[in-house]
Length: 147
Image (tube, rainbow, N blue to C red; front, side):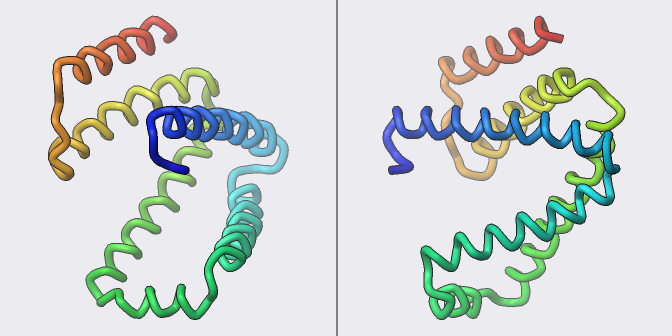
């Protein structure tokens, strides 16, 4: 289901559309309530919904058995990743409340594209073909025009 070119493209578009809707709704709530209240509410609601969704698809015993496979270094990486996510959420929401949504999404798209390409190349040994490099350049040019 999550493989095959058409499925990948379709799900990527769906995730992008949902991301844009989330960004727009956050802009609304952030101006109404404030960064800390929205983040607190999101943490509780999103965490609860995620846990419920996961537990409906996988038995808790299986989840805990997998978690036991992690050593202290793995938990340290998990902690750093979660800390990074928390920091980016707080910074991102403060940026969102004080700046134009369209500008931030365009900037985010360009940085995401470059960071993903660099990580894929350096850490996952994905090949950077001329076609991929050309596509990246075209997307970045399009983002620059939009700004």
